Image 1 (cartoon, rainbow over the protein chains, first blue to last red):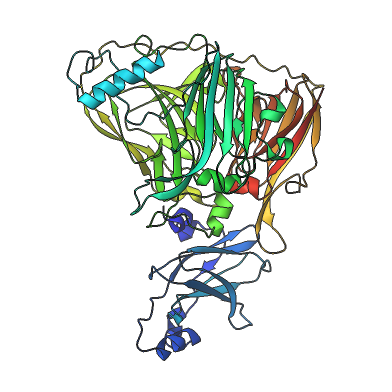
Image 2: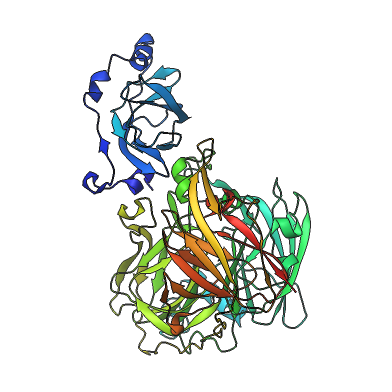
Length: 133
Length: 471
């Protein structure tokens, strides 16, 4: 069962703000993740995951995604607020496709992006998605 | 009689004698390739079922590239069907050959407290240890057994089994009904190589594990055969950790006569049958008169956290084929088993508030009255004195609430009374999100009785407590 699909629902029906951040794809090729990938030209760079949903749940935000690369070692999730730079929010095994980010401040908007790491090589970053717990 | 019927099925099936007299006649039930294993009765005493039950490591084929390293009772998933009659004595010589401690909880049975398999009451059965369970089967119904220690992991690994306790006037196959099946519904999450994932993701922690492989009696998406026009009795059980099944067969209406340990005074008809983890239902339906294949699906059901948008999933295929049944038997009359539990203004009310949240580390927690087990304060009642469990679900998802040691009867939901004809003896019931149910109960055995959510990840994360029934 696709667990991400379980949580998916039309965006119009969501009762909270979920806003794809503007310019998310612009980060591709300019980040630490892609720099790491470029550092090893002899290996295949894994494809980036795609964030599909950000759901408000029990005071936090629940991030769901699809993995374009099946054998990632880890998925690393980063978050930022409007005033801060990205920081690592979580690291999960490569087969995971969701993570709950609990320790957030109510009313503040958070933006997330992900990348896959395989054999020490990082993918580019995923799309970005924002939400407010 | 059962041995004779089993032998008949085996002979007909092995010989491929579907069209030979005695095997393929409209009067004969079709062979049941999904029939559960049984356990040999080691007792010569009357009205006694004495069996050996061994929890052990086994391989089981879930359809992955390799068999999965399951834990099983007696080598099968699910474990054996224990078939008995109400009033029989059940003796189970249990041996734990797992690499860790376990217990056997007899789900839904009224029994002495020390036989209940609750680890904090009777202690765990250590790896390599043994325990003899010995009690009288007081009630007719479909029950089951499973571990009550690391329940989320041990049940997911395959440790489940079924007890069918027949009542005194049950419909007879061939006379009152054309066929009867015990169907155990489950799901399991396995990797491509058959191994079990070691990482539990947050969806699974919140909703309970939901597998990528649906199972009926341990088989992946099997085909069930039915004769056209047959009157069929299905006794269904959901042993999944978290998945709710919402059964549907196109063109078929389920005639629901019972659930858990009781029968409805007023059976009802439905084309969707919702069954939460640990629940059982006793249903009849008439197979379509036209041969063909029909899917048994689980339809979307929103149990909270936007879980209702998934597409239907096919659980099994029904093959309606063979000689048509022309007997047109009516649905059997089923007498209600339990009498209403008397409740009045002076009946004690025990409040239970179910809630979800996160702890200081950001991990999900599931609470009862603001605390997680074992820190949930024990509440008290007295043997033989009816009481009401007032269960308020403040969380944003359904919780299947299970009480050990006795049955309860639902009185109302959010103040709206349940019709008397629907007050069946239950041991597990869905407390819908944001709803409050009043449940009347009455212990007949003293002791410390557990109650908990039967989404196994929730009970392990704290949504569990004890009721002390004093003499």
